[in-house]
Image 1 (cartoon, rainbow, N blue to C red):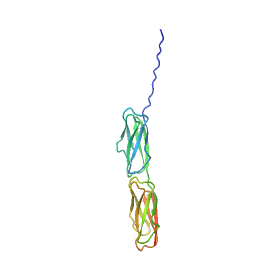
Image 2: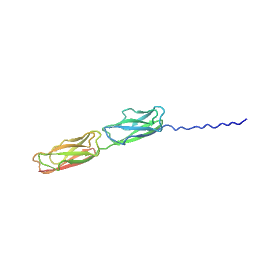
Image 3: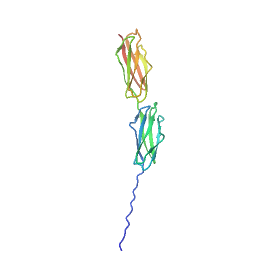
Image 4: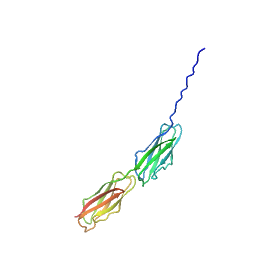
Length: 203
């Protein structure tokens, strides 16, 4: 009669499914835009799983709600974040799932005045000149720059507008007839960014 032996039955410990990261094309966000974020789990899911979403900034909102579903067979899901036109400072987008969490820090993409030039170096009394202000990057939404007079006679608008998708804006300076020869200097201001442009008034 033969002896029989029982082989031990092994057990495999399954790693818990967790959220591993939250990503976006860039951590620098343009005010007035909608940005796609992606949440990633540690492995594909066998059935639909819901991930909780939150934002630490009132300027960063979740138009699709505070949850996103990861579809069966997938490990990622895309959700959208609306960036307020008034966005300032920093914020964090966070995803929570199955006792785990991941976050993506975001900050405002700060527009700065890169250059301020005039079409002509000299403008005669009674004539006009065109000023061009250029930003450090294309505007994602309308940007308004304030203009102020530093020196010299002449009329010009109080602001210049750079439209979404553009990098620069223009305005006209009119010099009154009979103006004396001098320098015309105008200051452009956008938040903490300032730059002056100037040209000569003379014949």
